[in-house]
Structures are given as C-alpha cells and as structure tokens.
Length: 335
Image 1 (cartoon, rainbow, N blue to C red):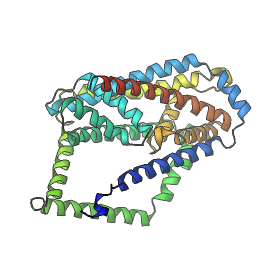
Image 2: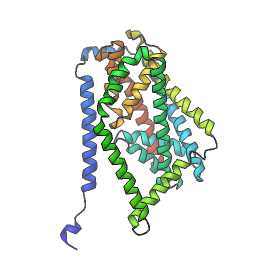
Image 3: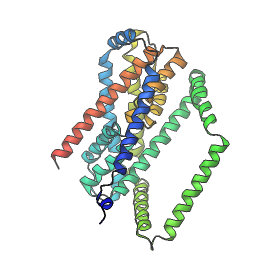
C-alpha cells in the first residue's frame, strides 16, 4: 500500500460543504434583495404592531398540516407490506422538515432514512413513495395556480403574466429545449446500457435494484385501498395552507392591510413557489417573492411586505424546527 492509498478521501465531504456554502450564499443574496430598501425603524414598528394571537393560531394550523401530511404519506406506504405506524410517518415528516433547513432537499432523504430505520422497509422503496407524494404536491400546486389564474385573472393576472409567465418564456428558449431533449435522450441511452449489461456488471445490477425499489414505492400509490381518504387528506392539507395564509393576513388587519380570503389564496400560491426554490428552508426566496407580490399587486411598500413575509416564514420555520427537534430527540432516545 502506498502513502497516497492510505490517505483519507475528503472529496465527498468537500463537495458537501461547498454545496452547503453555495446554497447558503444564494439564500443570503435573496434576503439582501428583499431587505435592501427596508426602513428599519418602520420595520420594527410594523413588527410590533402585528397581532401575534393570529400568528399563534397559524402555527397551530401548521402543526395540523404536519399531521395530515404524515397520515397521507402513511396511506401510500401501507401497501408495501411492512407495518408503518402513524408515529413513524410523523417523525419522518418532522425530521425531513428540520433537515431541509440544513441542506435543501436532503430532508426527503432523511425522512426515508427514518422509515427504513424504524420499519425495515428498503430505503429506495420508501424513496419511491416520497417521489410519488412530491409529484402529487406539484400537481396540486399546478391545479391551484390554474384555478387562481382562471377565476381571479382580473386581480392577479398582471403579476402572474409579468413575473411568472414572461420569465418562463424567456428561460424556455429553443436552445434550452434542445439541450433538454439531448439530456433526455442521454438518460434513455444510459438506462438502456444499464439494463443491457445488468448481469455482467455489479454496479449496473445495483442501479437496477435501486430503480426497482423506487418503482415499487411508486406503484404502492396505485395499490392504495383508501384512495378517497388520500384525496380528502390532500384537500385538507391545502385548506390548512390557505388558513395559515389568511390568519397571517388577519394579524396585520390593524395596520391597514385590508386583504381578504381571495388574497390569502393568491399569497398561498405565490409563497408555495418560494418554498420550492432549493435554498435552506425557503430562506430569502420566500421573502423576496411574497414582498414582490404584495408590492406589484397591492402597492404595499417593500418594508410592510418584508415584515409580512418575515412573520409568515418565521412562524412556519419555528414550528418546523421545534417539532423536528422533538422528533429527532424522540428517535435518539428510543434508539
């Protein structure tokens, strides 16, 4: 063995640290854009004037949303044959949330790990259920967004057209579509090679095993016996998100922000896109898109918009971190 062979390989750790730093820098940049023109004296005054009783109610509703999401995810996992308890899925959801504040999207892997560790269901199979659940979430967001655009275009069409549709048109040029097509063909070719030589190479055999596990998790959704319960849970989840948005609006009713249930639906939709952007816990992205929406659609000042976004995001973040920490502690104690 040579000296170089005995040296530990730090490349993976270095890559993880760089990824974390880059995403943290992105979150900080988005925060700077959100707060760059804020009048801090007005910010402090506006923050104090908010009615935090409504914020407290919003946090209670967010906990209810955690529970509904956990129950819904469990429905997908039940056909896998292993007994997944409500507490297993509850801890998985909470650990996923708190992990996303450390590294974006790592929370999905973390909650798969929780279920695998507590039940023995293969990791890749649990990952398949997460892919299915997140796909349904994205489909639901698209349907909600379409509903808002269809029924409330007169109110919100300008923002949607200028900030969302136009930006998408600029990005999805013919060159980008060509690159996407080439990438898709490359993926298909890679999968064909893996399948063709799966028996002659152990790495390819492992890839096939992982893909089969993910497909098994995905197929569990079609084997679900309580499909109507799943639909009801999905509707309840989005109702909770709307109520969280509306209660936050009500906390500002004393400061002149005269918005209603329809506006809460719009802000819920816009805010959802802020959480989707891959930065730690939606930090910066949520603040920027919400303050921009409030200014563009309602003419609300950037300072007030940032106050609203900070309180809305902060209350959800505190709830996620608190219950995530409790679940982590519970799992550690029962180890």
